[in-house]
Length: 74
Image (cartoon, rainbow, N blue to C red):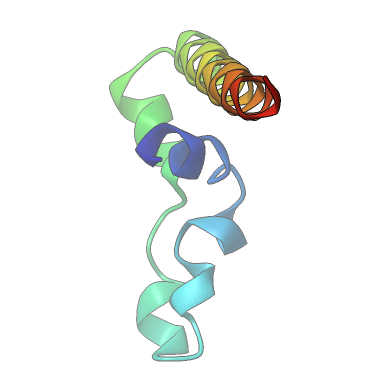
């Protein structure tokens, strides 16, 4: 769940902007996750890793759901 959440936090409004209605000045003043990870890691490597993890987790979930559905039919 965390990887899927992190994979969707690329733009500023998705990072902390969702909390802006609580305190707009505070939450919109934080840098987006993309800037923070770009400072700590190589940005392309980070995005590629998150994308691959996201696709892998979604694939595993889809496979598990499909297996559960098919096992109930038999």
